[in-house]
Amino acid sequence: MSRRPLVLALAFAMSAPLAAQAEDLLQTYELARAGDPQYSAAESNRLFVREGSVQARAGLLPLINGTASYDKSDSDSSGQQVFAGTPLGTNDSSTDTTTRQYGVNLQQMVYDHSRITRLKSANALSEASDYTLVSEGASLITRTSAAYFNVLVQLENLAAAESAETALQKQFDFASKRLEVGLAPITDVHEARAQYDTARANTITARNLVEDAYQALAEITGRPVADLKGLPEDFQPQLPEHAGEDDWVKMAFDNNPALKAKELQVKSAEEDVGTARAGHYPTLYFGANYGNTRSDGDTTNNLNAAQTAFDNENDSKSIGVTLNVPIFAGGATQSGVRQALATRDIRQDELEAQRRNLER
Image 1 (tube, rainbow, N blue to C red):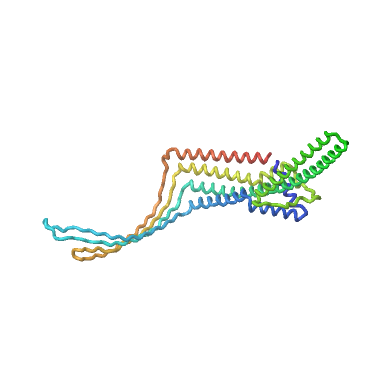
Image 2 (cartoon, rainbow, N blue to C red):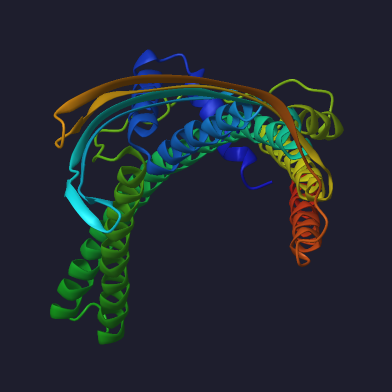
């Protein structure tokens, strides 16, 4: 209930007949939109959550990897040739080998329930982040207008306090002069002095409140804002035409972005329960591999200076499916399900709290 007057005040100000007032308020709002860290955080969170949806979708697409390697090796060997116990000579040889290898691996999910529910959960959160940003935008309007008009109110209060201080100072001076000529008792002077001191204290308090109001507005806009223009003196606010309070409540339930975000967060949490339960389900993946290996080089026998060249090439292909059936995970899967159920209950309670807040 306390937020409605602020929203109405902004609507009244933006529909005011003087363009200077509307432009001034709108310029302040534009500063807030560019400089408010709370709204900026909502924008960054929206981008962050959207990437989660992209990553979850990638889990349903084929995974393709390529490998390549190049190796060059030299090896030397030596030994004695012996016949009937008699050494015939030294048999030394050396081998130079060059190996080239490349391959391609493809893996495609055929059935993995956790990846499907994870994508649904991420999509729900991504949509919820859109509504959260809209809600933060509405909150920014409310906070900016409240801070804007609070500055104007505090300036009016300061002007009233200064006027009261000036008037009471004159009364104190008048009472002091009457005391000097014997026309007023000392009690009148003390009373006037007390009222004047109170007025001075009120003025100091009003100045502090003005400074605090300006700082509160700068906290939203990110920079000091001065020379704010108030509503014109002949401004006559008009309430929006509507059937009644019940219609306002219905409109809030149908269009409130914060409520929509909570509903989608509940949906995401329900999908997370499915993801946790998928730990009990089997998974099936399709895989295909292709590899090529080629080795070439030569072997030199130092005993007879003979050199032998070689060139070998091998192609390998494989295709198949892999079935994984979970049997026992030490209780981790059941614990994950209970944790996901608790998170879902939290989101449902938050949704109910949001609904009750709208009805209030």
